[in-house]
Image 1 (tube, rainbow, N blue to C red):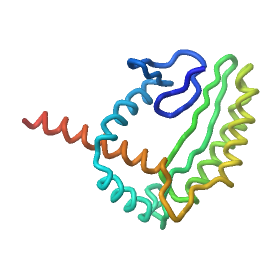
Image 2: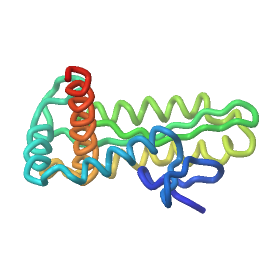
Image 3: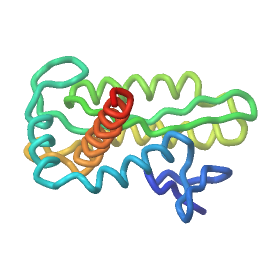
Image 4: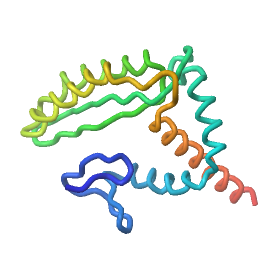
Amino acid sequence: MASCAYCNTTILFGGKKQGDLRFCNAECEQRGFLMSLANQIPQRDVDGYVARVHSGNCPACDGQGPVDVHTSYRVWSALLMTSWSSRPAISCQGCGSKRKIGDAVFSVLLGWWGFPWGLLVTPLQIGRNILGFFQTPDPATPSPALEKMLRLQLAAQVVQDRQQNGANA
């Protein structure tokens, strides 16, 4: 089975191809393009930005950090259709836990209604949220996932600045 070149999600059917790379959807395809730009940003610039975000206030609740990437998992189903996703977010530990609880409840209520995937994936996603309570990022140092997400934010800002400068020229 193939996996997404951006998020590493397993691709069962379909996906988007870009040269030799395969992405699970158009959003990951776009982020893959941004990642190639992000890898060109000097490491010292990225390190400074990551340190400021990690030690800063939570973007979700404006509470005190440390801030890192917390991933919650969700599934919903409707008869023969099932959709599941990993939802990484930059936040404090408290906001990350609230998202995991919210997505676990969402999955309990809406995940089971698809056959066969809803019945199979729902317990998996609920279990991943529960496991996420015990596998939290080290509060002393930023995680590689935080660096990756912030690199993408910097690359998106570069693209936006280029587009604005092109429109103003």
